[in-house]
Length: 622
Ligand code: ZN
Image (tube, rainbow, N blue to C red; front, side, top):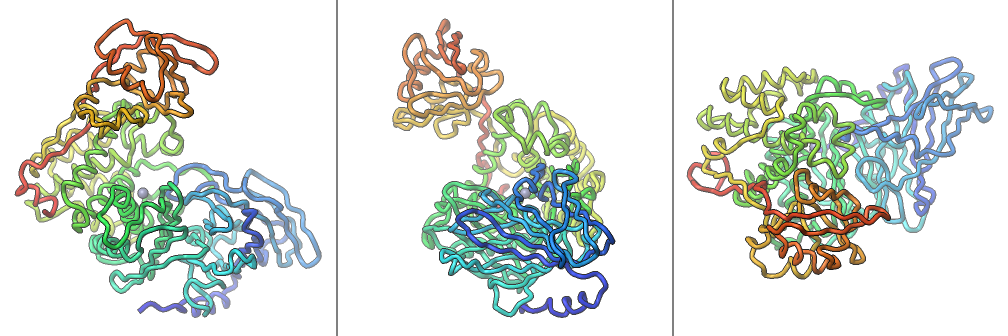
C-alpha cells in the first residue's frame, strides 16, 4: 500500500540536523506572460558571500542549453534590504551578505514546449528544476523544500499538480502545497506538470503508476493503461525489483499538435506527443499509437537503465559542463531495442508489425554514409555536438547510437538466445548488469559492459559484436536473422518507403504501382510551399548531389519546363536513364544550371520476411 505521508519522519530528522533546508517557492502570477515567479530562502553557511548556480544541461539530453539565459529580474535580499548580486559566469552569480537569512527572487521565462526546459501558458505549465532553481555552492546536499502555489489566475482555477517529488502536505495527491527532495541533484530529477490533468492509475508489483495527460485528446486513457501495464510489468520482471527511489511512478504527458519526445527521471518521465496519437478503447493500434507506446516503454526502462545503472562518468552528474562517455550505445541502444521488443513480447503487436518496425531501423542505418564514418563509440562520445546538433548532413555524417546501438543489441540478443540454447536472452544480461553495477550504485565503465557481453556470448560472436562497436563497417544481421526464421533483404525505395522523397501530391499518391515509383531516384528530400519546390536534404553519391544541389535550393525548370509540385514526379519519370537533361535552380538569388541524370534507387530499404514461423518462436511469440 502506498503511503502518502512517509516523508514526515524524514522532515523531522532533517530539521534536527545542522544543515538547514533550502526553501523554494514556485509561483504563477500570470500564465499569459509565461513567467514563473520563483523565490529561494536559505540560511547562509558562509560569512560574506555565496555562489549560486543553475545547471547548463539536463541529464538524458546531452546538449549545453544554458538554462540561466531565461532568468530575469534576479535579486537577493536579507532583512536589512537588497543585497549585491553579480554574475561570475553565464550561469553563476555571487551574492554578498552579512550571514543573515537570504531571499533570492527572479522570474523564469517559460515558453519551451519540450520535455527539456519549462513551459507556461493559460493551458498548462511544465517545469524542470534544472531550468528553474538555483542551488547554493556548498549547500547542494541540503534538503530542498518546494512550495507549489496555486495560481490565482481564473484560467488556472481547476489546475492540479503532478510531480514525483515527495509530498509534505495532507491536501491529497496531485494537490498544491509543499513537496521535498533529498538534495539538489534529486530535485533536478523531479519535473512538475500543472494544469487540468487527466489521470488514469494502475499498479505494477503493488506500486502505483499514473498515466497523466494535459491537453485535449480524442482517445481513452483507460486504453493506454490497458496497453501500458503489460509493458511496465515486462521491464519490472527483467530486473525483478524497483529501484529504492520508486514507490510510485508517473508518466507525465503533454499532448500538443505534433510534438514528440521523452525524458527519463527518477520516478517519472516527461513525455510530449500528438493529441492524435491517443486511440479509443476499441480502436486498432495505429503506427502513431505504437510509437507512443514504444516511447513510454523506452522511458520506463530508463528507470533502471541510465537513471540507476549508469556510466561512472555520470556519478555524480556534473551539470556545469559536457560529460563524456562512450557508453550511450548501451544505455540508449539496448533501451531502444527492448522498447519495441517489449511490444511484441507482450503481444501488444504481432511479430510482422515488429519486424516492419525493426526494418525501418535497419534502413535508417543503411541509407546514408554516416555508418562508414562514425562508430557507435564515437557517436556516444561526441553526442554533445554531432548527435544533439544534427542538421541536414546527419544521415551522411553520423551514425545514431540509438539505431545502430539497437541493431547491435539485437545481434547480441539473438546470439545469446542461440548460444544458450534458448535458455537466456539479453534481458538476463540486463539483470546481471543491474545487480552488479546498478543496484550497487557503482556505475559502469566501457570495459565492464564489454566483459558483461563477453560473459554472455561465445568468443567468435563477441569479437563480431566488438567490431560493430568500434568499427565503421556495415552491420550484417542476415545470418543472425536466418537462425530465427527471418530473411533480410535490401530493396529499392518504393512509394510506401520513400526515405528521400518527393513532396506529396495527387500524382504520387495515385494508384501507380510501387515498382514504378522505384524506377527513378533523385536522392534528395524536397518540400513544396506556395508551389515552390525546395531542397531539404541531399544524399551523398546521389543524382541530386552530382547535379550540385544543396539544401535551400529552389528547383525552377527541367529541360526548360517549369517545375511544380504537381509535375515534378512526372518530369523525373520521363527523363530517367536519359542524359543531357538541363536543371535550372535558384541558390538564394543566383540562377544556377546543371545536368541532371536520374537513376534507379539503390537498395537501401530493409525488408524482413518470416521464412520459418517455427524458428521465429525462439525469438518472438507467435
Ligand atoms: Zn532514451
